[in-house]
Length: 489
Image (tube, rainbow, N blue to C red):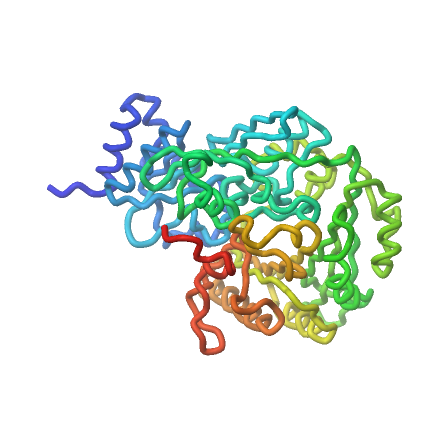
């Protein structure tokens, strides 16, 4: 009688962890009552909840390193693929979907402790913690300490930190990965390693190059950064009729060269045109969100000198604590920092597709107008383009310091996003095809050789098509840039 990989994996896991009631609560099968709830708990892209998507044979929720070691060793020994997820928000579902045979999800959401050493200026962070939990725990111990990671509070630490982690303080302090000083991980052999035992080569790779193909990171030791008692946040929006095109053209020249304490992004959204005579006609609204590590008076002085065209005034600004700013950029308008502990995303889940680029040369006003026209073509779905400026500390860190390669030479990062309510397969394919055409339309105006992408904005199209008659770079090479390949795995 042939034993299936899933059956032999289960026996192996229970034997290694002990077949007690405690052990069986670590592993869930499709017959387990809570299996479906746990599977869906952190899935935000509903494309991967359809009946056509293969579901995992098991979901393992380890309580500690030994359980992870058991899952890795048993998966390797019995031919069961392991997918690792820390909190969701995986754009392409690669942390919880697998093709080509049975697989298991290793869900790290129970490994979410955050131990802050306020005196030493460090913290050990579980890979299953959400970014908001990390921020809140740091501020609870020290109101003038922070950490430069992303703005989405419900994103899991495990993937974000290993892929880079860009956010509102990156121009001052670099990425999250730049501020990782140690890690505890399980390698493909099931060995438990820290920085000293894994060696500098592997430690280099898991900071910005993505860790999932190299092992399972359980905990990161991060270096905290100083934040002032008060920071200033603001958000200014303009439509095309209010001069948004000229502002964006100017922004790309100014934002990467501002003082390191200031980051101003740009978010373009295709909106219904309220003034249009024809129903359904769209315009573009651009919002410029910003944060200054200092007081309002100093910010306005900088803005008046460097970017007066934006028209920033006191009425646009709020002086808040750093932890309140984290709640603000996470989308909590009342800036209630306790909401950062809420792991359930505040936004309704939908199907979506995203892509990313890096821009190295300023784009002309004429080209921006063409971009707006292309975005406005999308008839019945939200279309968003999010742009984040480089410069400052991002330029000062050497390209090869860690695996994250996007340094000096980039003006800004750009993410394209289209979302829709999941329906028939033909409708989904239409949206996916629109995004691919949009991405191709952008190709003359972004980085080349390779055409760079941000690893955390996963895009499985990379490496699966050709552009201009040439085979495109693989997803890894595109995301690692000239830091790929560092070594043979």
